[in-house]
Amino acid sequence: MTTIAVLGAGKIGEALLAGLLRSGRAPADLLFSERHPERSAELTARHGVRAASPAEAAREADVLVVAVKPQDIDTVLTEIGDLRVGTLVVSLCAGLPTSLYESRLPAGTPVVRVMPNTPMVVGEAMSAVSGGTHATEEHLALVTELLGAVGRVVRVPENQQDAVTALSGSGPAYFFFLVEAMIDAGILLGLPRAVASELIVQSAVGAATMLRDSGEHPVTLREAVTSPAGTTISAIRELEVHGVRAALIAAIEAARDRSVELGRAT
Ligand SMILES: NC(=O)C1=CN([C@@H]2O[C@H](COP(=O)(O)OP(=O)(O)OC[C@H]3O[C@@H](n4cnc5c(N)ncnc54)[C@H](O)[C@@H]3O)[C@@H](O)[C@H]2O)C=CC1
Ligand SMILES: O=C(O)[C@@H]1CCC=N1
Image (cartoon, rainbow, N blue to C red; front, side, top):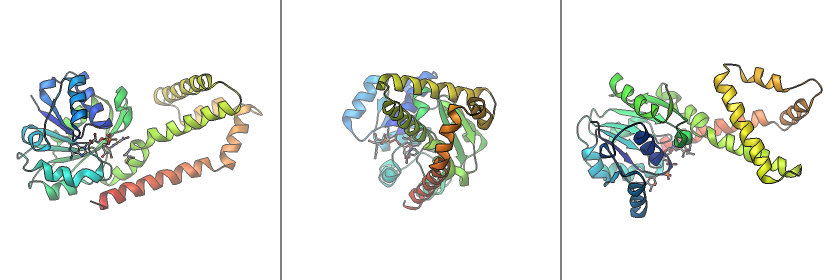
């Protein structure tokens, strides 16, 4: 069996481990590395998966998944030490290019860069994968299968990964922000918080399901809600007056720029 080690079992690393277990991978084929001993103990208790040092994980793994913050990559690459020849390295880190790993790891190491997102926790991640210089079709297929256990997967050229990071990597935060603001609006209008929250969360689930399953363009779906001289158009006019569309475009451009910066900082 393929042994998969996750370096950095925080939000994303743990969600991946849990998803791999749900998809039928045996706990004995998985291991993780965490710098905080309490966190390690908690994860082993919860998932029955073994903790190891980065160096042990790297020695044992066929697939080494890197899920530390980009700012911690130098330390982790130093701690890994020697990698077995042919070990597949899968980076989930925002901004970090495959060339960074290739320059620090043994010559010929296959590297796949992935940008997932937190809906991985509920098996609804959106992940984009790109192969580095030595990643073969088999490596990309394996990573697609692994990430397929926790959501949808697309393949993109690596030069699109900073844009992907800004759109779907950070994307859930924009939706959460919108939901938070809409609940506040409910409070302003005098609704109890619990009622406002239920109304908005279910509306978000319904709207997201329609977007995914209807095949309709978002404009068509929005037009179907927007009656002549009705309530929705009054709200839409305010969104346009306040520049919400331009703000979202600028926000996503800023996230893309930050992803590029993170890659350059290492
Ligand atoms: N949170 C998100 O929405 C997304 C995060 N990512 C990427 O995933 C990576 C992980 O992000 P999160 O899970 O949010 O961060 P996190 O902070 O929850 O998890 C990182 C974990 O790495 C551990 N760690 C750090 N240095 C270590 C070392 N030397 N050895 C062992 N463990 C070490 C930390 O203790 C922590 O538990 C980041 O690179 C991020 O860019 C990608 C997509 C979405
Ligand atoms: O904010 C971040 O840097 C990470 C990467 C994508 C989502 N969260």
